[in-house]
Length: 313
Image (cartoon, rainbow, N blue to C red; front, side, top):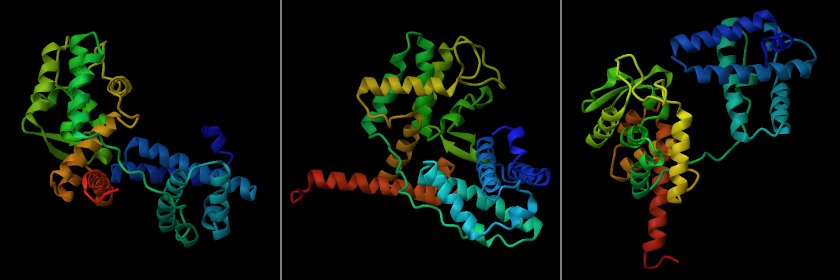
């Protein structure tokens, strides 16, 4: 929604409150810009709904008077728009987070908002590759480009995703200052949270092979992974080459760059890794996020059991 359109739904005081909350989330909690953008859009959607629902702009006083029927009407509105349960739950979570802050600042009771029920949805389990497919992805991704250094670059990126459990943004955020890599690598992840991840020799060799071929001079403040014109590598290019590779290998559509990170976590867990340690390696803020991998591991074990147990079937 444009700023001009938003002013029709929200008073200047309420708009200032929203932006102050976002500024504090950014400064005090290290909330990422992507999350800030999502928060703003979700809360504005709620305020726009209230404006139409009550036929008046929503300032601080009207926002403090939100009722349980208002919240039910909002959730029904989202369903009517065809918004899925997962997205509706995310929007409601953003609204609740904003209201906790606003109620404390303005001194009103936010119970009607905080007790609103989110729609139930089945959480999607991570979709990792098996070990052979993960290795095949790394071995084959370099063959997708006719330019040798580009192929080496792509292989190095995918190796870091799988070998270190990095997000694609984290891998592409590395700079010349991160090279040469030692046994560990300092990563600044979501919310500016810092973590230390081990670097396997195979990952160091892959990056070294790429840098030996890269035509661009390396500087401490320059991106480690370069595009064809020397700028920072676009994540879409990594997604595209991964897509080409998985099609060549006959892997499912879930074989994405992020699936390499999922594979890292699942294979560690299968090998007996400690859940808390895996949480630290992945940079998950909550252990519950990491626990999704235990469900994946159980699904895998059941498939093995059903395929191999003498009494199965």
